[in-house]
Length: 391
Image 1 (cartoon, rainbow, N blue to C red):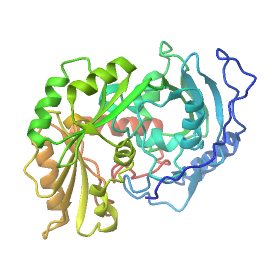
Image 2: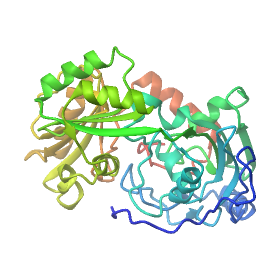
Image 3: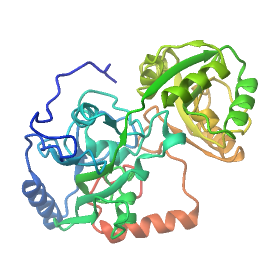
């Protein structure tokens, strides 16, 4: 994964617009007709397609076994942005960095703090992966902010689901289904989001606490209306991020104590760039990176490896030494430990072609997933095998 470098924004809010006026969209390119034609051809030829945006999250999920790619990068641009209504709509190939800079120019942001994993990360890839950053437990996940989408179906038809307001529920659930589907249900061409204002004040703290004490304090603080939007333990100290009004942040900072920390910690955690993650990809043969989603107060599973705790305990990163036995047995042991603790485990280090990084679904849930795939993509055109080998 590449380190994120600053880029010049490709979007500039016009100086003529007043504070209550919608911001004019950036110059972009509508490539939806060509994308529809490519899907239509694939449908007629019974071919399969690998949907590609910036390709910065290619490591996440199984390898798609097809020779044909459908790129959304030519379909980009901010279609509509109304800072007053807190709504932004962008084409799938829009660089995530460009969208977030447009929002920041107007004092707003994507509150769920999506990871980039590279400068070329796109809006469509962000939604397809469904990954949220350290702020997720306090503000919500990607799916909580998606208002509507435009999707190309397996027959090459461009359809719209949802809208641009929270109260518009037509097709709303189908819009959410696209979040985290890894492009297996259709080709995202456009997404509308709810955005939120930037906080008036923020502060980052570091408290020297062992993990058990840190989790106890987080449990107590969680019962109070404190402006916490980040809580992680790196094995040595508890890192806390505060965001909100100046008075609230200042008072909470004084109450919690600790020393001031670098804000860079949180962007590095989001991008898996902390020293903890250094060997996760370069030494994949020796170390395996896992993401465990567990109840925040659950005991840490008795597994060999190094731990980093995020989301106040609800997300736990494990760098596990690859077992000397069969790799499949090693993976099964970690998944079983996560399930016993009340959660599930996802392998982030790329897997071989026979396995899936995701926890196998219970039979009943798997049945409904297959039925959904069959209804929306009966020929299996889109990203076949991206989630699981058989669909």
